[in-house]
Length: 409
Image (tube, rainbow, N blue to C red; front, side, top):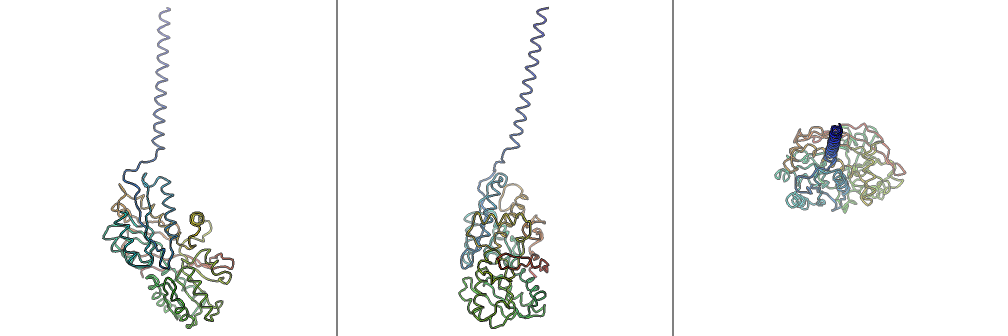
């Protein structure tokens, strides 16, 4: 009997040990599964992966806010894990307003830096100079639409319609809501503004009014006096200015010196003039200046717009206060959507294929979506708001009843 009890005790002990061992094994497997779930995906290709950006930050134009916002976006994207564990790097060149520098900058990025794509280029001559080159190199260029050449390139994908379409609805507002009959136009001498002058004249004729002056000025404003003199002689009741805030300020000040009663003239500016800087430059006398915008910068409760404003104030306090950062951030948001559609490694070929596959691209900070699978040629619709500058430097929405303008027309 004593011997039988000993065997039963030993059998019980062995059973308990087996159960404990099994429990430990289950815990280790569970911990292993948890570790696999929480681990960061490892990059399967050489990194960082270069993304190109061609900007205009010299030659009388300072659009660095677009590039800076895109840099901030990519930094945030990398912090979230990047492209399947791979870090991205934004590399950029400044093309200014010079065709030679714009061409050389693109070639340095494509051939020297081996970028997989061009994103958010704020270079004003980019599409005009480089669209064919990007197609030859098989490089997707997802860029704001500065001129009509952005709509026709084989590998160029435009977003965010520019001043050419925003100021046509603005002209409609001046004629039908403000009652203007004699309208003058002053723009910086860049391709998009050259086309804008022609389009404004044609649309003014349709509306039954006259474009009494159409003047282009150098980006350094060296010839602004002569242009303003011609505008003053045309006796306008409204002046459209397609330029940055300092240029708008110069045109207003010099018209005042020509004896024009500024209070009797309605001024309308392009999207790039939006921002607190405009109020600071013009002061209380700037009350009543109208600005067209094609994004959500003043929409109450738009969290992304507020985030971009705060980010620029914190990280780039010296950057010009214009709409350019919203264009740059939108380029980043579109980049994210393209990367989600990429199959396999991130290369020029896979990026271009992914871009061409998208038919519902959300611009996030603009009212409309894009269909990159439809072109080229592409067509974008202008939608947005008209704002009025207040005496305290703030803006109020005058109307968001924009006419729809398709470009190219």
